Length: 298
Image (cartoon, rainbow, N blue to C red; front, side, top):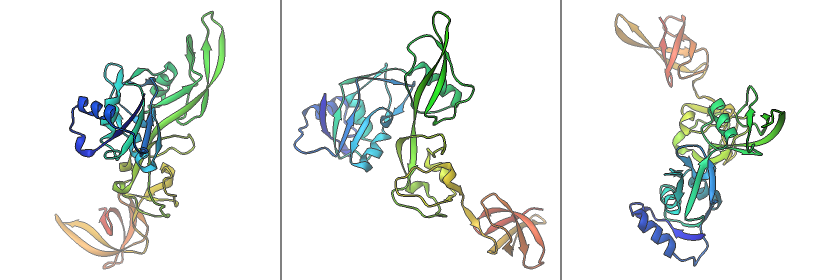
């Protein structure tokens, strides 16, 4: 069950058979950079999922974060050791030594009925782990469930018609976005410099799951390195500040005209703010179209 492999970027184009041969024959002379462990059977939603939703990944933290985002695409209700190796080859684990602790084939069963209904209710995209799921019989969910809730009470209908309540524990998995270094309040965020890993969600602070959601954003508060970024941590980045010199853009007789002005309010791209035309001294309203540029509203 224990495998040891060295994944190299140049080997990504190898056939699956060659990859498997490489894993089975590679030696374990030194400690692996990363360890990935999977059980013989998992319960998963239909379609692709991320390795970190179901695998226990230990070792180098940076490599582990990247490996957790490896995409697994089961075929016929299973995936193989070779599939995992190929998926890891598309991450930062390429070129590193990886210890795989898994059977040759992992069987993928449908997710639990409770998890399936929770997904439909909340539109959650990733794994929902339900501890204490019901084995049989009907059940109903509460009228509303907030993603990230740690538990919920199911109403059960037993085969003989009796009703009962059952408490189940929940864990919600999702990609989380983080910075490798600490960032100060008001820092402008650049999605290209942010990283992702699979983490778990809490109901009090909905977390950002895609770095592109943070384009044109800035931090409301400072964050520590590696901390997941929540939606409440960010706001639209201010590109015009009150009292700043700006260019006013207007259309006069079909021609574009630019004038000097002063911003009387602060704002982000797309915000409507008050400005002063320095030539006429009039106060006007305009839409921020870019840093230091405001389009006058006729």
